[in-house]
Amino acid sequence: MVLIKYIAKSNKPIKWVNDNQLEDEMSNDVFLKNVAEEEKKRDIKKYGRDGIQTIWERNFTYRKLPFLVRVNRYFVIGVPMTEMRGMNHIGKWAVLEYPDEMKKIVDFVEWDLEKSDFLFQDTLHSWNDNMNLKQMVNSMIDAGKRDIDWWLDKAEEEMKQKHISSLQKFNEVWGVTDVLRKA
Image (cartoon, rainbow, N blue to C red; front, side, top):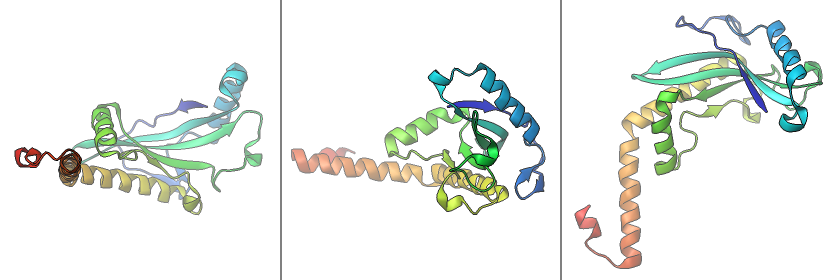
């Protein structure tokens, strides 16, 4: 699968044409043109027929920490958009991701707290099928804010509890009684 990106560069508030179309998202004509261009150059045997185009992206900052929200469209080379299956009713979904400057924090959270969805979620699930695009984008913005609130307000306590619990298990297994006193 190949990701083709389109970035709407703007710090303006999000504007909507309707509940399923952003004002500055990639047009359907440009999307179809990109799919046609990809079809000409794609090594199908190596990369397959399907891919994703990011048709809109916005950087957000919340409590001085950045996150990204993207809107993607799926395509299958050689399959008309009207015949594609397995996609929601509008053929778009929203994604919460992290910018490069958050990678170290995200890696730490994933490694130390085993939280793989920190600043990484999407609306491509059956329980999101009845949402319109505006709801999907807003849910990813809300998820980004929740993750940042968690990081700034709760993560440190969760790390302490996890490591205290690990030290307690170590003490139970090895019978070392003063490990916890030194912690």
